[in-house]
Image 1 (cartoon, rainbow over the protein chains, first blue to last red):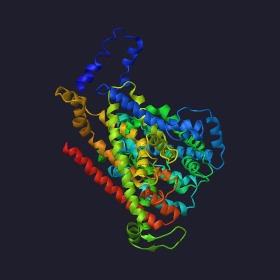
Image 2: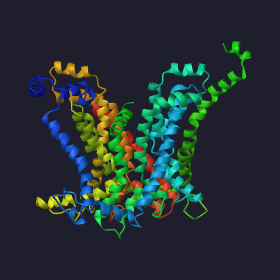
Image 3: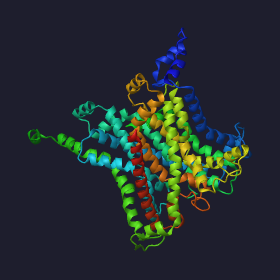
Image 4: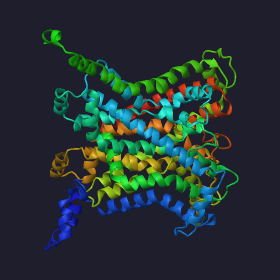
Length: 310
Length: 310
């Protein structure tokens, strides 16, 4: 099989004697041509195209239904041509007083913004300390962080956390949603790995000799070096918390929902049987993350891949 | 050295000493304070609550030992069934997902043009929130107008009420999990594949091993740690499955007419939210935690063994 693919691929690069400028350019950027060992076979290409179609199709279909009408959503083959009703549907969905989509968007932005800021800040502080500072108990504390990453505390802790929120009369408030999510063990872990690579010990030593305090070193040396990793952690945290459902569902009511709760309400309430509207609302909930994904896709892919091999 | 310099310390040196000693703790303290409040304390409190007869709105609580656990295990059929359901969906979702992810990762690991574009296409479903996935896929699997049944109708098979049966509803829910997470796992496998030394493949090619043989004899064994990692993460995620089955059942916690697709997390939330019973839901939390531990351990043993035999 390997010889067959090899011979099949030999003719392609050979009969191109005149190296045109665009080709040359492509060759100069090795990142763009993949770094795999083997060339893809026809089956590989077909398989990848099929997988890509499958991963895009449900999203595309949602847009089609949201931009045409509910009657389009039945049976097989599915409707594939978008219509012109999207603007009208968007206006209707956002104006619907019972769906609370605008309030949901606002709440989700506040919650996710605060959580993301906090996770990134606390992770850079902790990651720096664990990577570069020597202090008693650091090994045990780092092990605790790793342990907290492995254990699904959320499911176990949801009952008492709910009880506490009831006691504090914080049900239906945003702080009840925000507080338990302000930290993330993975963030500390990721930042520690990154600081170890990105900040040489010598620079920290030199700064100390110049009289810099630990906090000053964090601010002037570590934070600037961490900027790329902070972007990645912020993106992953934002996506994770924007899509969070269970805990907001526990403590918030339909009057004061996150965007995810609003979508659930919209899709299950009896007063809105209109699938086109439901899909429009769902589309609205996806748009912020979709924009992030298109703009920062490279960083998100990189973050997921790097986070796993470390 | 310390005895030599100690008597001549200025206040500045003292300050920098204190900075070196105390600041590391200050830097890691935000994480651990929040972790204690929202991670450790709830865990202990759950243990306390699980051994008491304790309901929302009542101040008196009575120590009942293991009665809450006994109730769940022997007197509340829904709980045991929910464990079966959760396990079933977990297996249906995880096995094909990881096999596909491995194949897709292998394809992505070839020498592709525009590798980043392919990776983003495969990862795209992750932008969709779990609620949105539930909304879209519930329609795709709908009985009357769903796409799947439309297709079955077209090829002459009778329409299936996917929600009604145990296995059929598990299948529909598993498809939601697979669609959202397959690409993510593929990227994690891909990241690990890229760390495999090239010369292993070159040597194997010289020895006459086909690409397929190389995949099974080199790639898969080298990926063992990462397979263990993804199986672990999938176990935790799969055993705490909540949103997909809830959205499949029109946003309700019952999991279908007979609870045929009610997961353990749904039972827990149902006991807490609908019945306001702290004691029993706390016990359910501990039992779920225990089940996750068992599943993770069994998975670890299985993955370890399959690899060891090759």
